[in-house]
Image (cartoon, rainbow, N blue to C red; front, side):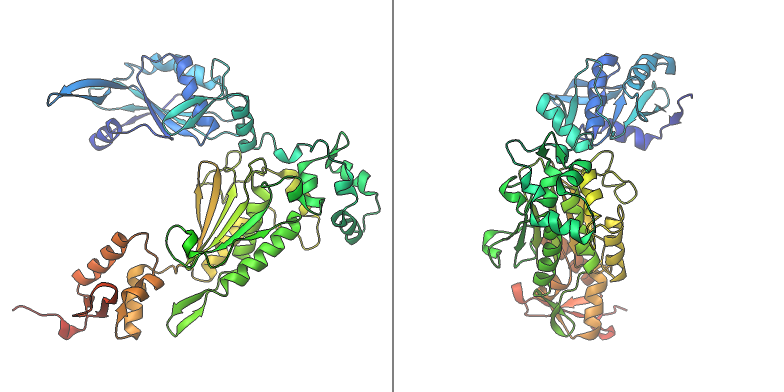
Length: 472
């Protein structure tokens, strides 16, 4: 199939020349060797995907007596000149859909090859048979441990299938958990034979998955890799500090089926004790039970158990944060997480669904359920963020209405509104955002500052028709 050529307008032409290389973007001159370029392609495919503009040359020029780097549009004279690059890149993707290409044309300039690289399900090697990973604006060659980490992140290999050496299988064949499980499910089989059939015992050793599900205390065997910590911070600030902790963090241990149930109950119990300023004074905060349940379940079932860290549930005055170790698995990204499916711990997800009243009743629908539940309560949907080695879901108690709407609605029912009330009812990332909203409302003569109320006591009221001076 021929590659399309797209005409670029002047605005986009200038924008491309001003692009800066980062975790998702690289600029390359056409002098680069095709094999060398595959290192960048490998790095993007093994990380979060990205794009390359091939035909952007960076040169050092003298400007105002100083040497500065500047980008220049120096591409291919005709499409055929890029064939070696396209053929070499296509050869890297043998088992799945590869890169997408388009040529960019600007009048009186040569053709730029724009390459979009997907985040892949498989491990992609460069032409030198080495594996690279994109980190910030660098392509880093990976050693054996780095490759193993990519395999875990992509779900090609799973830590759940690793066996625990020097551990007797009685740890899971004679536990209270397995005995109760077989009884409640009316399974007429010996624990050993059933666990072997489920691939939870291999080479006469229990697997990580088996320990997580059926050991009475997995944390004694895999310390720091499979617990949950719950924090309560008495603040709405962007970060919690020790001084704002309401009590020492609560640690939840035990088998993961029990952890999920207890973590949801405990989180809800703490949340319901958090007062919130409403129209009639302090009132109870309500988050949908389905949202808490699905997001905590998702964190426990899909976290990376090879990482020595716990799941962290942080409860603030205006939000809950659920952080689980490990990046998004496989081809999953922030953009497609609600549509696509990829399970890092497939065996764990499958077997826990066999428990009575399983936490993952609708497999693959967890986050969608959480989002729908927030919308039904008139709250903004959860926000998702991926960090370098973890995944965070923010559940904000923030109405779908804008800050301006909340302020004006409040002043329709009350004479005035002070700074404390404004910041309690509305969520602002910073004082700058708060001041920007207030200035905008004042400038439009919608609210006015109450005289002599300054600093923390500053207050505002709704502007009435007589408050506005009309100059004739």
